[in-house]
Length: 118
Image 1 (cartoon, rainbow, N blue to C red):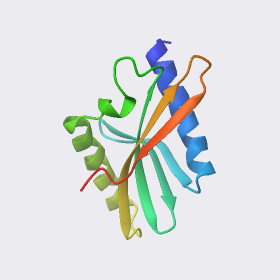
Image 2 (cartoon, one colour):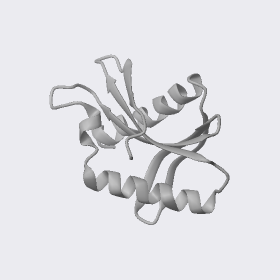
Image 3 (cartoon, rainbow, N blue to C red):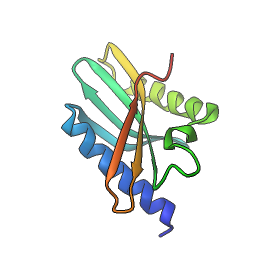
Image 4 (cartoon, helix red, strand yellow):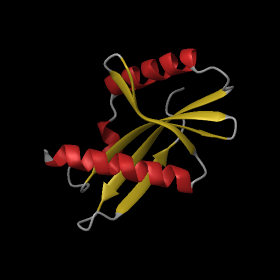
């Protein structure tokens, strides 16, 4: 398996642990709608959170969250709208980016950007 795919899978596993430790109930991981995907869908209180998870092994070429561009946000919010149509009942929705940077020993540092879609 390619190194970047391994890094992504590790990041998504770490994201689930992080979310649960911070009071989120993880509903889905890698939820797909057509060609679009949401890395993690969780709820906390009366809010539904859609997470885009980005992981890198260093910040040498930029921070992980910088990988989320306009096109990615379009697909991310489109998939989120499809999920909402199928799973009603949440009054509040947030689109969040969870950025994870791993050190040389795979110890993660987390940076959450909340409510990126306005």
